[in-house]
Image (cartoon, rainbow, N blue to C red; front, side, top):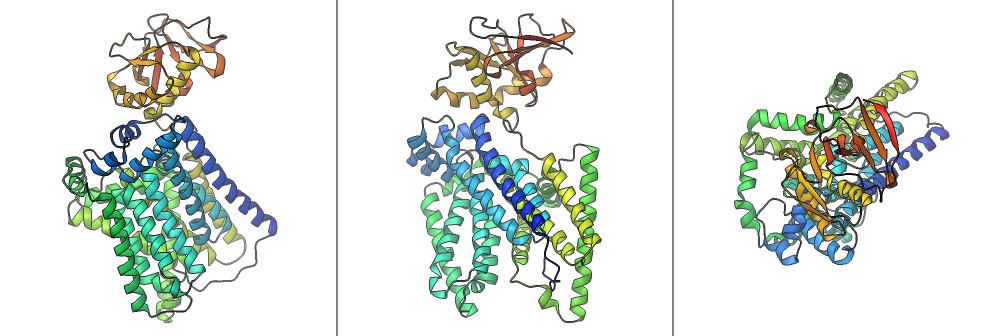
Length: 543
């Protein structure tokens, strides 16, 4: 972590290095490919449509109106241009955020490569931080989160690259401009990124700014130059963006209400447990609890190992070698530690809540890389032989299990993304029909996403009558009065599936039960199947 004097070991076999490199590359490609596929197939959610409808009709509105927290300003600006140039594409509003999400994926891969030394742990670490559901999903949804993720982690990756590729001091404007632009990208799209950005910029300016230059300028001069130039350029860019709405942001009642939640020590610890543990391990089964306990035991053992080595280095007066700032490890640890300290000050001392879990989604990859670095550096100093291989396999297995359990679904996030899939399947059944849709009270919050598709060739009306042709309800609201012992699966063209499962009235059927039930909802068709337009096959399946 903390880089004790490195022990030398025999180079790994060529086949092992090649397999790990190939696996690392495949995870990058799979992450990017799945992100593109899911951005195209998952339906538009409430917040995406609200951001687009309320703030992206013009640049003036994006920069001058802040009456709800849905205005992630840079995202609104990018949405406007996406509509201008790519409005023919159904999910054009996701093009900017998806591009930022791809940049995030590439940046996080570089950071993992530079910070994790065990090849097999590089692979599993990248899988874990790439596929945590909340991180993966918010890295392509048309919100501000993907820009914050891209800005923060591209900035970190750039600084790690600079530490390895030092430049002459006369080129000092280059890091200043890059860092300021990344600050602008992150904070311009996500206000809650301010704590991590403050920690990142403070760490670089005060501790690392003089380490990226090859001709070793005076530390004080370098710090002052970077402090003044980065602060000034970032302020100018952000003030230009927020100058018309910063007062509205400070007075926004929703932000004030959110800041009143989960305050104090219980709120602080509960928040960290939620985003760093619950969102990653998903402790919803005994097996997940066992995996979590095993990981905690490994981390505790590794920390004890490092404390023992550090105390030994202190006695031998070699602690400066142990805390080798030239390594990327301390850089990430300091950023993570400062961010958590700032969160503590805000939540416990200032008594202001930290917001929703997604507000600090960018903390998850950063802290988890630090967790695994602790294990990685411990393994590095175990020595050679079977013990080292065994420990690596145990850690890699646990991380692999976490990654596999978190593997994102290729089509859905939750019931909030059913809008596109429902309308596409109805259009496939009868493209000329104007479908009448109704929502139960539990599902009314998702109907806003449907309105987004009005601008494209989808024919539907939203009614408030439960006897409409299509009723969208919670899975638990599916009628329970069985009229038969079987469900009928009807396979139509383009993969349309219709199920009857003891519904009333007898002509009602459920559209693709297997698909929508995974989103905890049901799409009930209260109309006959258009036999002249859909060729159907029946298969009885015992219920």
